[in-house]
Amino acid sequence: MATVKLGARPLWGLLAVWGLLACAFPVFAQDSGSVRGLVTSSGGDPLPNVAVAVVPLGLPTARHDATTDELGRFEQAGLPPGHYTVSAETDALGSQIFRILVQAGGAADVHFILEAGRAAATWLRAASNDRAAAAAAFEAGVQANRSGDIDQAIERFEAALRVMPSCLDCHFNIGIAYSQQERFEAAEAAFRRALDIRADYAAAYYGLSSLYSKQNRPDEAADARSEANRITVRALETAKNLARETLARGRAFLSSGNAEDAIRQFDSAVSADPTLVDAHYWLGRAHDVVGNPSAAHLAFTGYLGASPGGEFAEDARGRLETLDR
Image (cartoon, rainbow, N blue to C red):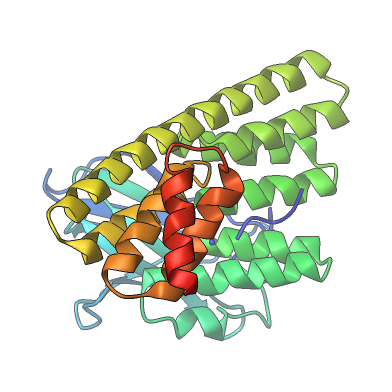
């Protein structure tokens, strides 16, 4: 299955990193939250006296500093709800950075794993916002997948998830990558995480179906494929209904003399449901009104090609003859 465009290995070439978890935890006040976590070496040894910086996004001067104790643990409480970067850094063992969401009355858990000679990727440090950072990481994952470096692809997709945890396509691509490596349990978990975010994400069910087939689990494969098909059919019907409503709005605009807004509606109808052939006819009518003969000709031709005996076929042919004169 191909990579979808927008580990366990670490975020920036380090070793495996535990995910960020939102969980109940005593805080100073119910209108504030906290971040807590652990810093260890690649061998699992706790790292004491490591500086941890917690910085609210967009407010670099409002920095909070913490230091790990003898067990490598740290905590910063009393944080206003919002998005933060959390970084751990040592001279000997490099650094790591996460983006987290702090919620009122809750805590975000972070596990840093530091390794000598490794540091947070410069391309992620340089990103000006979450969306840019996620896009950079995701694109890096796509490129790694295309080059056949599956481990690197997983690492980059996980990097995107650290910045944007709701990235459905990231979870899906991680599942596909693990499946290619025959790490079936990890692949299934990735697909399930996507479904936890959006229960009607058909791609994840298709991924599960393929995964179960590889494991010789035919009944589960069939169930997953059936659910994916059901979601897809329902989505197509929703798109068709939307297209019909959009076409009706376009005709209303055209009747009122507003051809430009009518064109926008007809274009949207065609995009939502290319099989709604009447939208092509009305798009031609609207382009004809605004004096765009080439676009009108194209739309009428498209309508006649799809529905030569349709309701508006005779009128469309007449209009084409006029345009060709």
